[in-house]
Image (tube, rainbow, N blue to C red; front, side, top):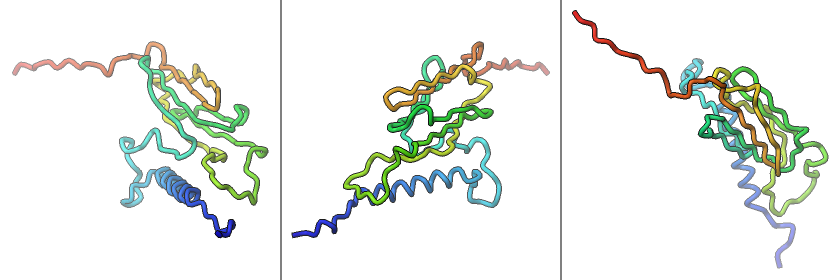
Amino acid sequence: MRNPRSYVDLGSIFDQIFDAAHNFSDELRNFNHFDGFGDRPHSDENIDFYPHFSYPPMNVYMQSDRSMIFEFALAGFDEKNISLSFQGDYMTFSARIGEEKLPEENVRYFKRRLKLKDIEKQKYYVPLDRYAQDKVKAVFKNGILKVVVPPKEGQDQNDGIKIEIIKEEP
C-alpha cells in the first residue's frame, strides 16, 4: 500500500515551471526593449504593442467599425479592485484579488488550475490620435471585463492618402 503523503502533483509542478517561464519571458520583453546587441533600444517597428502577458487570459481585436476591443478573463475579481486608465497612447490595466480571496497558507492542493493573484501594471497600445479614449466603455459581467474603445469621429477610415504622381516634362 502506498503512503498517501508520497503523492506528488506533477501537473501543479509543471504549471509552476511554465508560469515562471512565461513570467520570465514577459519581464525580458519589457526590459527596456533590449535587443541583445549593445545598449541601443529597439526601433518602434520592433516593439510589441500588445505584449503577451501570461495572466490573465485576454483577447485584443478590432471590430468592423474600427472599435478596439479588450477582453480580460477575471474570475474571482471584483470590479471595485480593477483599475483602468489612459496614459498617452497606452491603456494601463491592473487588478487586486483582495485579501479575503487569497488562498490559505499551508494548504495542500490536489489540483490547482485557478490562479488567483494580483495583476500588476500592464500596458496596451491605444493611439490617442486614432481612438476616442474619453468615450471608452468598460463592462464587467460574469468574470469578463470587456473594454470598448471607439475610433475618433471624423477619423479618415481609409488606409491612407493617395499621392498623385505627375510626370515632369524635360
